[in-house]
Length: 513
Image (cartoon, rainbow, N blue to C red; front, side, top):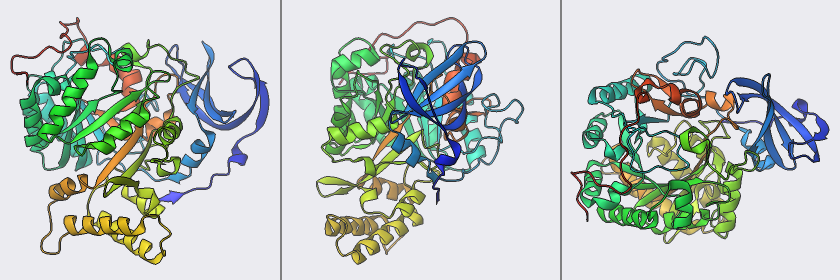
């Protein structure tokens, strides 16, 4: 891990001009960039501009002229995030050659700078919701075959060797007729540590036996939960009493003991006042292991037309961090969050939380920074291996010699010693799966994952992307490149629109609780 002190002054200059808002403002050129024209979506040259404490991406299209979008709501956060630099880890095998240049050679090509931390497999485009913010067009005309799914799993293993987590998505993946078989196929691959499911939760709410099956199979659920109130839910996810469905899903998942992540899409002026509410939910429910905030990406069938949306006034990572501090009364602070080193610093921020009796203490408050960054490098989750054990022991030694400089030092040391005792017992070496289960009872996580749309798209970020769509032909497609440039060309989803499923409808195999 390397921290760089970038000489910003050497790569910028001051000038004054009329800003996009129509008023005069001092602007500072920070660096050149390449993005997309929001009208024709062709790659164009651009620059990152600092103005009034924020960072903007300005692009120039030969046909459609100049456009501008906010990419960071806090210039200090933006500049500091660039000081955390780690060389990427390349996959074992590439699928495409470098011919036209990024982003036209996606697949991955040798120009890509990071392996896949999280492959996403879209097994269906059938869905029982029509979300106004959705990035895809669920045409209800495609279900992946078992042959395709097996080929994708083999391709991921061939390119990655081993993988922490794969994610099954859609559409609504739980509607796939072979869904449970797919879970078994993925779990049978010893190279894959975790299998997670991205779901709207309707099946979890109406079919308790399904939740029991997920717990028995060791499947992780990523539950879409943007708020716990219907006004915000209806704006983002459509009609119906979704609050009741979400609450029933949470109750069933908790009762069955399903390890769960809450995923909250955030849109300016819609649910950005609900960040603290989501964090309190994470703190209060043991079965919820992590929380992911996703600033809305205005792309795709729904998102591209979502209103309200002003590309000059969107939620960015530092905005989420600042709102989290304000809405939790300082339980989480800006200093608790750091960029994920394996990705581009504008894509991810996160913090890990150690359970200390009846509260949670962020890791950066007691773990030496370089040790912490090494733990989360090239992966989105902490892996309880020998490196993790060493970091815990180092943290204990450091607090022991720091004469109480860390608040609640004794309680934190007690929790760390207990973690070592449970995960690394002297009498026998536990399997990784056992240590994962123990660690999940001791540590929680808050992620912020910022996807891009045509307004905020940057080639630099695509090259460091570690969240990839896994396609049947073997390609691993960077997420934002696929969503903005390739999804509409995917031959799997061509053809007429099929019959949509009604909101809340149950399949024949489902039984209400």
